[in-house]
Length: 632
Image (tube, rainbow, N blue to C red; front, top):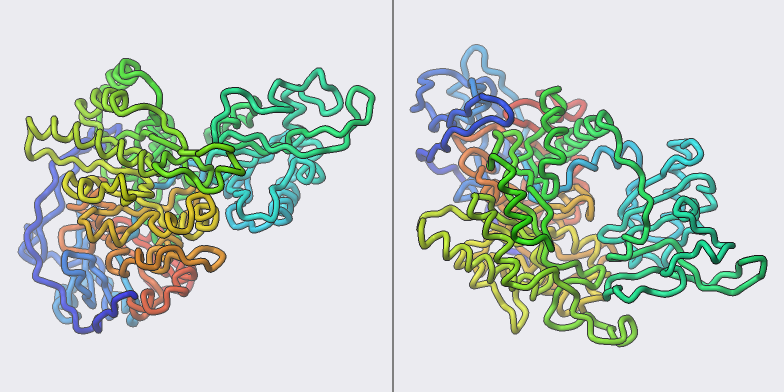
């Protein structure tokens, strides 16, 4: 049962205390130095300078240490961006107003710190909106086929032009869709449809580009009729019995449907070319506008690295990056040798490069696969292995502990903090154990080393033989979780892991009770990018079908909002200047058409509609999104 909340009108902000200032840092690809944010309130070096803006008569949720609720907030623009001057009661904040201060009456509405997404593969978001249809909400084969037909009508592509989309999940449908269903709408266009994770579906035109002809057996590759020796448990080619004319004779033959899972996707040897550079810049423009429409003011891109930084910087230079990208991880690293990894990072003459709007920092690694593809590295096998795999399936992992430690060491020695995709309990155990060894060696020389390393996804930390909650808490290892998986993939995860393990998956209550900090992200493009889906999942643990998975692992609204704001700022070494609404921090905030923040906890079903109730999103004190009709 979720805890009841006190009357927010009875809460008052605590007095502002001096905050530690960050060291100056080099701006990305520029020589501009950032100055630390000023100290708080009227006692700053600004003296009697008045704020530029005041919002009052609202419910300002500060997400400070006491989760204080204020009525008003004031900020000003300085030479280095916005600076919150005061958060407090009506009278004390309005008293700061000068002749040029613009004052907005919130009429009782809720103000939150700008939401931060700790795991969003951002560069494709705008591409998908312009050139694709989102398949993530399709609940039947018919819906998938219709979405492809609608896309063909919208784009009207030339013959031979690729048609792409992503987000299908075969567990949501009565039966998997096939290339022949897609062919009806795309006879002259190759199609590539990405799964939510580690899968692809193509049509017959794509096979033709590969030189494969259903009617000519001499064109069939060695995997056409049977699986290859190197296939693992998650690797799969879907096949279906068809009546075909082959080599001039009618035959019943079981041939690929066009759907591939796991490493089998490598068998598809033709791919659409990358969108041109200008399309990628447009995508950043659209994508950052779309995220601010939802109240998101900053993200972490966990898979971009140097390959996407040029486009991000170009978009920023053109004024087309409308929110903050707090970290772009360099990666991904799996099976490369320590020597190869060392050489790669030795070739990068910098680390922690950028400023408050765009920063290249951290590395991305992967231990195992995922629950949806039955490839998480687990200590107890996936259920129904008797009929699906024929032998116990414990998933897979990329490398052993000693090699992973050797891979990581040259990167952490250069100051690149690691963030590792680990879903199964054995995958998490390897990550936590290796982290602990490396952290011990670093802190032996520097006891005060500030190590903010994370386990990405972090599904199963509390299985009987591998429980690592206490160790994560002891070493300060962050659980970078994606609660939206519970909502969108709860049924498939439960079917693969068992309802019991699903009830323990991403156990936020247990994480927090053990003292483990959580950082919350959407993991778009596996899941939809709306932060409100994740909030709903944290408070309810329910899925798209209404199923509930481990109600005892729900957390409170206060805890969830911390995971979406200040704790994400902590993950990115940004908590001293963003993540909460406190004096001295930047004015990144969102105004909701909501009269009481605790309504989200009392009536969580309303959370799924909050995307339409975002009235204003400010990034650095300036409107990045304003809903029509809202005066600011």
